[in-house]
Image (cartoon, rainbow, N blue to C red; front, side, top):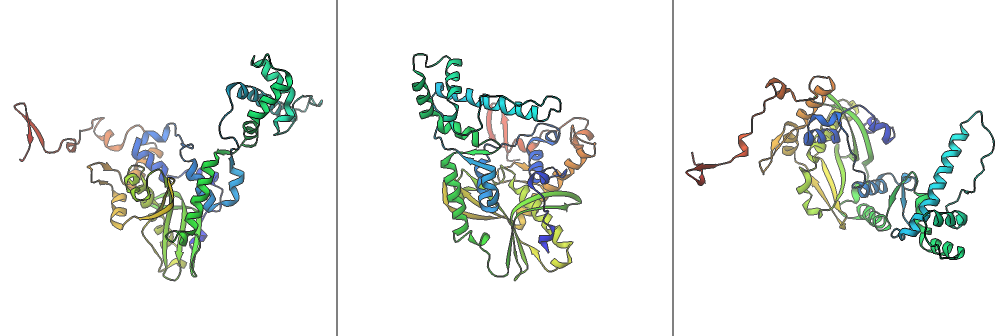
Length: 379
């Protein structure tokens, strides 16, 4: 069955698979094949909310290990922050020293340090005083007053800095909004079917796969695969969050290359289904985007990609604004051409034309200049 094709590997191992993905093809579409050999930014900051919602919905067991909700509302004043940062720098230096000496087979004497292993700032009073002196602040304060000032304003900042190490920091307001979003998705009349299946319906989350699309092996990870065994229909679904209201998701559908994701994943599932005899009679339905705006977390909408758009996304198309978009098949060819060492600096067409590119006539539409006047070209 289709679950048998779900790769049981961690996300990092999936990402290491040397196969073209939606994000790679989308990058090639925007920046050209040069992106394959260039610096690729993952934009983790802008994706933080969406990733948190995804994990709250689909992988709840990793949330506490992966994220940390900040206790402090904002950073303390500069003087307090500088002192706390001094303490933190000492802790980090001490930890690195312990790591280095723990791997030494020659020098095995005990490590002596005034730093303790604690997330409680009050345990570092001597370091607080040293930090004030090192930063040349609070010179006229008594030692007790220095310690009280730093503890009052810097305790939450210090604890956040200690406990968040190795995790993604999340502000409380974002955490609360993500919790509300995941609750809405699980209970709303439009979206709850993706989280509470009816009899005969199977749900698979974070479905990782490899499959051939137009003769090239690709990889993908779908948020939801919903299989209705009663009707033998398979629904590929991806959860999206964003700034725009739910009713305006179509405005970013082309901009972010989501059409590439929809057509690539649908074709991949069709390949999987066609090559599994246990799925005989099953069909892959239109790709669905379950979209919810972080500015209105009570209003999810399901955007469905029609077969017409799917086919156009495979071959390439010109949109309603006259902008041309490369299709999945063409992008896969550019990817494989570069992988095979043929066309990495330029595309095949540019090589064949010896580096010459003709401007597209569509740059000018129905306008001529004649005797200093502007008029419509009706010829």
